[in-house]
Amino acid sequence: MIRITTVLITLIILICSLSNILSACQYNVRETGFVDFGVNQYHFYGYVNHETPVDIVKNFEQACSSVFKNCNIVPEIINVEAQQDHSALRYISQYNIHSFPSAVLVSPDSQVFVIPFPISKQLSKNAIKSVLERIVHSPLRNTIIDKVIKTYGVILVIEGAAHPENERIRKSVKQAIRTIQAQMKLMPKSIEHPPELIVLKREAFQNEELLLWSLGLDSQKINDTYAAIIYGKARWIGPLLKGEEINKTNLTNILNIIGLDCECGLDMRVMQGTRLPVKWDGKIQTRLVKHLGFDPENPVIKLGMNRILRKGFASSPGAPAYYQSPGANTNNQDDPLYVVDDQSYLKKPLYYLGFLSLLVIIFSLLFILYKRRS
Image (tube, rainbow, N blue to C red; front, side, top):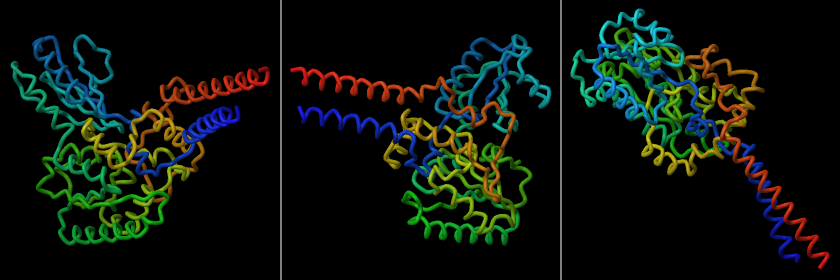
């Protein structure tokens, strides 16, 4: 009897411990950056009209479904004549769109990027898909994804017109990386590789036009040098630094946030920076899980992180003085406060654990009573 009772008590303790794990934070800010709660999405609006051939509309819908799967981009096809009350129709007149199909990409902070489509009445699915693929892929974004999975994060430097300034900034970035590397042993949780420098050269601006747009830059009007820090699931953290702002102190201050414990009390908007428009498919996620040692998309892990992040959002006095959330928009319906509501599936694991704990306790008591009567 004693042996069975001991086993039952051990089970209760294990279940209670697992429940406590859900409300405790085992992760650093970098790791929370790999969790996607579906907030601050980009929106793709594809426009067709009654003259658009049915085959092209079908190709458009299928291409959107395929290309934007596993993306932080929400696609919608709009018939401009059948849906005249749609709020996204304002972009047609605002950006002088006259041919169909056509499209715009709208960022979480309401920036608009017009997507050029070839003018043809015989657009194939592959032709449409080729246009859409350029929205979610580019050489530099693919490199960034590869680096953020394996390293502390990325410092992206966008070259300016002045060569001496570019060289000064490279030196400042390398100094900041060395400083962070020296501090990594003292951080709450070890990170294997230090931050990496990636330089976007001026001759590559055209190929990275959409990446630059997502950072608030026009590829045709860049003269100064800029720097952005990217971590987690291609999230942009801190302000877009420009010129003299790009120095060792500012870079180190922002980078330090990434290594903090996720219970450090920072505003959730600091810990869940705006993502670049990227495709994060199953192969990439598998690589990430291998490097992290856990799956950040696991519902139980998401629940634990969400509880910490919401608590931080509610109690935090705000971001540090040197921090500015990129693309902050208080009117955005994707505000982090809406990460998880009371009906979320993320709370189901807690209900299951509580129910299981109750069952174990009831059966334990019944078993003990039965043994005493015997």
